[in-house]
Length: 235
Image (cartoon, rainbow, N blue to C red; front, side, top):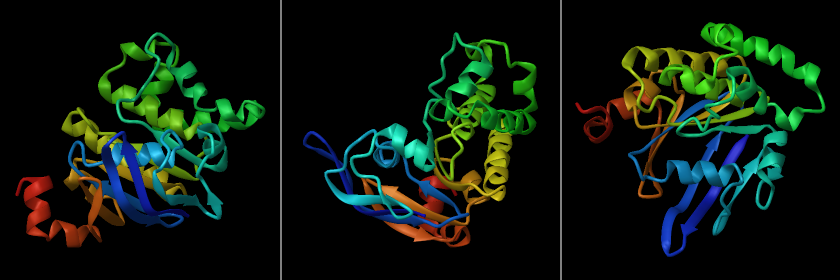
């Protein structure tokens, strides 16, 4: 469904991605592991149309995403939930959520059941729907960010570091929600530093280091690799 072939991305003279090749098939939940600065966010920006590749290609199904506007990519069914949440703190929770449906503004009726789905997944957001997003806890703000992405009606959902800075209990809640989103039919590519939590829910994994894919495999294979355990799990 989503395929990157030899994706290369530069920031001036700095090469952030070097020949990245990966695929995410329909219905999969794939995790991309990597330390801060490995290139995970750069890859997501390229996939989302926010950065132009210096070489290689990115395809969503039979569509070449090169040169397409980010709004066109969202309309095609690929939505990113960015690192750092990027909410509008002074706006209400519900208004932040509805911003995710902007590309589908011609079909307001179609957004109502998705909003109800988000509230069903994160009941606390229903209770706080009229509160400013900036007044929520970090975990609740991450729920808003994920919910906003779902309002874009993704076929493929990119999640960039969704557990960053969250307490362990909230990490479990967020990971459970991601697993449920995938089980409901959305294809997911998850970028994470929290390897142990991510590998509990993923079907496959890639490891990105210095802009290159250095390993690919099933979660049990990576968890059984001493180098991966030392680098990402601390064991």
